[in-house]
Image 1 (cartoon, rainbow, N blue to C red):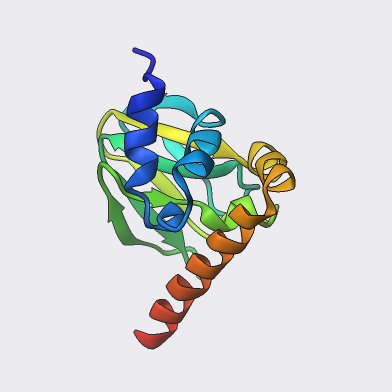
Image 2: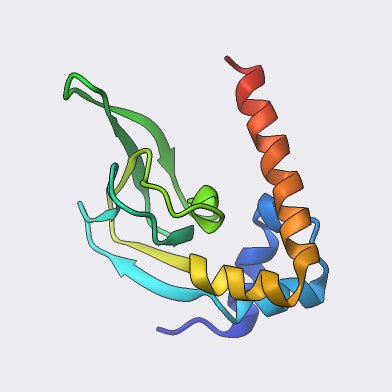
Length: 145
């Protein structure tokens, strides 16, 4: 089932990364999100491969798996509805730092990098707000180390 623009707006509005955006900016971004569905055990992202973009889980669950240099794997996080990941992939076309694997049927909203960049070119204020939020998140991670 395809989500209405109102449903997409509802999910995007709850994402802390976008909290500082105006309603108009959020609506503009919402039009760029696409829906993706995954089965159990599907890789949404794969460590070491290029990143497609930013994901918000609408339903389902997934775990973040990080493979260490010695080949061992560890689950480092779990995601459920309304969780998000891949924010760095919006700004950088580097490789994924972990794999995200579904543990049940999962539906996501996805914003691909080139669509995000097109939005930012139209409204550079969006980039400033998101970069400020990313800086806060990085600071929180560093404070826990």
